[in-house]
Length: 250
Ligand code: SF4
Image (cartoon, rainbow, N blue to C red; front, side):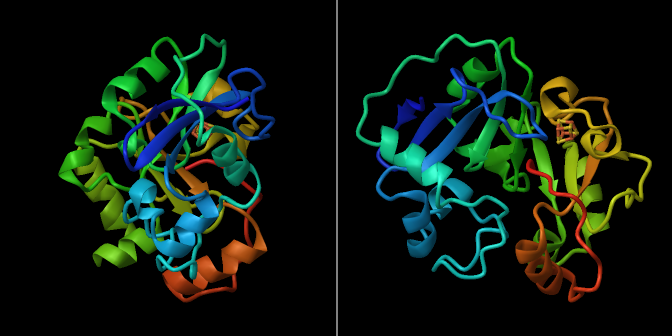
């Protein structure tokens, strides 16, 4: 059962999976936090541009009118249902639970209140990713989250993706870089996600928890067909390479 952990006038933070953890094959059983707009359901927010309240200027969120969205997450079922189940409820205390935590199953962790994030991850393994890592206001997240790096973001800021990753490393971030195919880690600072190479689940891996001495992660594009080809076409003008197996974080 999802519970509301926090809200202000614009957003709310929701936890799910603490009582019945996700069955996601990649993450394994983990609790999840969701950062959602308060006044509209996730799918409605995507159509009206209110998703910017929780996605910032993530290049995968689309045109702000419901079009060109390339985010791997399908908002229509789980996230809408979670929204409806808690939007009118009161804020509750953080529950005790034995699971690791995925920050921002939808919504960028930069929109979590810092004190809440610290409480949520205290004594837990966690994974988290942010597309807002270039912003001054996001630098506090470096010890907790990976900097998301992909072709679309590179295109948006006018850099090539390698230089974008190097830029993130120079700022002190570890990166989670979306690649086009397995094994495409081109820098000794990166390694393929161990789920891809060894079937390790996030709950046991814990490499995506922010700045440390560990290597950065490279991982093929999320999802299959429907999102893959538009991503390729938009980001690099190429739809010829086949997608890798489905992945679900980052
Ligand atoms: S590298 Fe990150 S995404 Fe891959 S298994 Fe480890 S925690 Fe999960």
